[in-house]
Length: 154
Image (cartoon, rainbow, N blue to C red; front, side, top):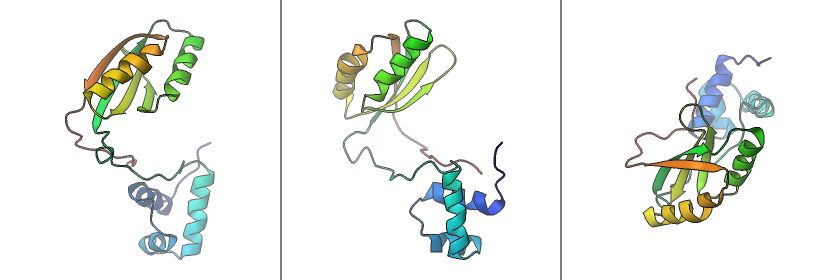
C-alpha cells in the first residue's frame, strides 16, 4: 500500500527536488514548522523510499562532456537471459548515464555523454560494439538542451 502524503510532505519533496542542499532550518521556515518535525518528516520520506538519494547536478559541458546522445537499441533476440545480459553489460559503461527498457520499435533507450563526436564514435565501436546482445542501434544527437529537471510535479 502506498503511503499517503500530506501537503507539507509534498512541499518538502518539491523543495528538496529543486535544491537538495536546503538546511532543515530553511525547510522548516518555508513550511511553517520547527526544524525537529521537518527533520522527522524528511527522515520518514527517506526511509519510505520517496527520497532515493541526494546528488549534485554536475555540468557536463564544463567537464568537456557536452555531447548528449540518445541511443536506441534493438536486441538480437527477446528472452530473459539476453535482456539481463544486455543490462549487465550496459551498467559497466561509464558514458551511459541513463538506461530505459522501452516499448515500440526499440527495446532500450540510452542517454550517453561524450566529449565530442570522435569520442562517441569510439564508444560505439569499442564499447557498445562489444555488447553481443545488440542487434542494431540508432543515435539521435542533442543540439540544445532546453529543459533538464529531475523534479516531479507535485
